[in-house]
Image (cartoon, rainbow, N blue to C red; front, side):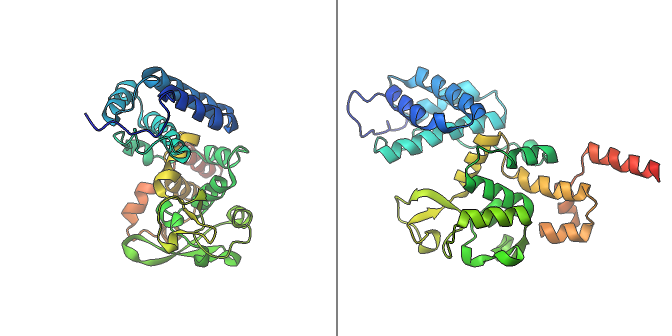
Length: 295
């Protein structure tokens, strides 16, 4: 067994009380669908560990028994809920370790390679319950078709807001440029609120561990990490963040954008690699066939 997680708490502060504290603080502000998801995961966890200490191996064994036969999306969503709770506990000074550290992220190649319907993308981006940071990040990721780690690495100094473009460091360290549309421009302006330096996408509170100066804003907040951004996306949408890039390139292909322009957008150097990303769906194929019959 792993080392029992050390808790800085009074003897009467049981795991069950800690779970309820997180639930009462965090869940009321969520959308209805997210509330149901959080409550189901938290209630199941509290039932299993409400009066027990939290050993990471025991928690992982329970989690595997509970979610092992579920889809990767369901597994990752439940994992995100529990990790969010651990992070909130740490901010209260109740937890010195991560009791969920043995629960790994589950990759599902079939899901991450699958583009979402354009209607689903617009449904997500139009949600009124999204925080401004997520609304801005997800819109920018979709419109730019950039990799999430590239966008999260952006500093404000890298942006050319007037021309809707930014300098990024691409795969292999190459200097490249991404572009975006009007919706991203509007949301970036609102989100930045006049900030002129530091990371574009920030954590909500000042960093509680030392960070490199490049990863800190003037007010002490840290750059939003890829792992955290992915967890939030999975929890709030049920999808994988990498699907965003696939979806944008597929939708551009379905709209008739030619190969050279798609390669410029995706920054792929091989048309075969691009073909794995930009795969028009059956609806687009039938629309094209119908258009040909009308000609």
